[in-house]
Figure 1 (cartoon, rainbow, N blue to C red):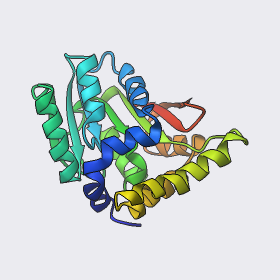
Figure 2 (figure 1 turned 90 degrees about the horizontal axis):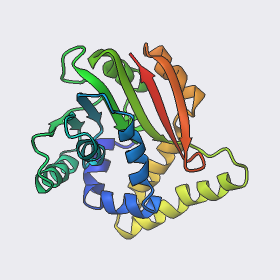
Figure 3 (figure 1 turned 180 degrees about the horizontal axis):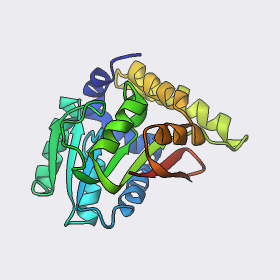
Length: 225
């Protein structure tokens, strides 16, 4: 498995633009859907924050909510820092270089934890989930956005061709074909739906459930400490 930190450092400069291209802009709606779930959260941890798209969406929607965004990629965090400064959100979002497997925070520190398209890139799903549970307060909410494989027998092969062939091909135009091939493969290998629910339950979460977005290409997982 390639070192994901290195991959995201290398794709950082094109990451936001290619996300918009590959998802036809729908990724913004997915993140809005995630943010809508955080109405009562006052202190949120956004893991694998990348260029801070989720943290920014939360700050815009809920000005009273403070978010700490963490990511192991310094290049991603540099871009995130500039975006936060340009949007004058520095008082609402703080950035920390850290990984999901070893969160540098005290127990029961956050009301909620979010992670969008990052859990599949952790070294150990359950270790990361246990860390998320550790830093959540009692009854705190975990929200995870992750790619899923569509179930529709007609749409599925079309989507998989796009995901496994066209995405890396477009990425290769920017000299990043290998990186986007890995990202596509990691999404295809990720535990799907009920299988991932079992990982959440094994990590100690309760009330675990999921819903599908955009014909099942993305799943939104919800769990409670």
